[in-house]
Length: 119
Image (tube, rainbow, N blue to C red; front, side, top):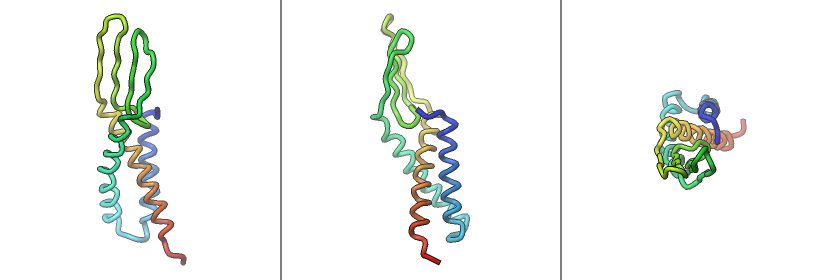
């Protein structure tokens, strides 16, 4: 699982690559609008990674985490008492969505560069 700061860095790299690929082709406002339009797609792909899970022993219980590259939903069950705790972390979901947004923007930047006419 990626730490939160690396997820955010991936989003920043993707945004920078996309902005530089669009610099001479469109106005800054149009590029910003396209970047914002990619955010809901990234949120959807982030939520779609819920089936990817990582599980293991944790203290006196079992931990199951869902999401990739950063788990955003965690369930912990205690073996001794039977108590369990689960929940969605909004911060980790945002970090996960930001990482997906960065990858999406990197792909769009590559697409822009490949479509650019020669000369």
